[in-house]
Image (cartoon, rainbow, N blue to C red; front, side):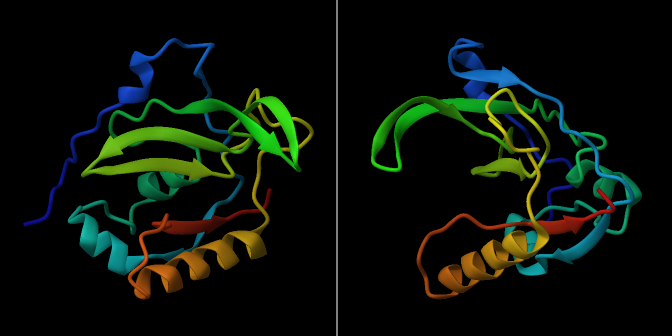
Length: 155
């Protein structure tokens, strides 16, 4: 039975804001359109999110949130290019919350406080390569991050 209204949690927000994350609104895309919707993953999630609705396209392109999404960019630290980099963070991805045992994110959602010099967007060919690669890895039975959809736009 499909879940028409998935329950959303945002456990990350129980941590201290400004230390572990910054609340960020996605920057909407201009004239968004679906490149592909991962119907196999939609079925696995057992959700009735209707990908034929304009509201859904707007949500997945940063224009209007679904459910109880509370977008935020996460802060982390570590080594980068063989050197300690100190504070890093989500430069183009936004954490939306948890539903159905999955963490949901928007990638290429726009500039965040951790974007450094980038614009916070994703190049379409890179997004498609990641999408196809993750589905291939999943098909091999290896746990991996998966994409629910890829969106393109005029921006």
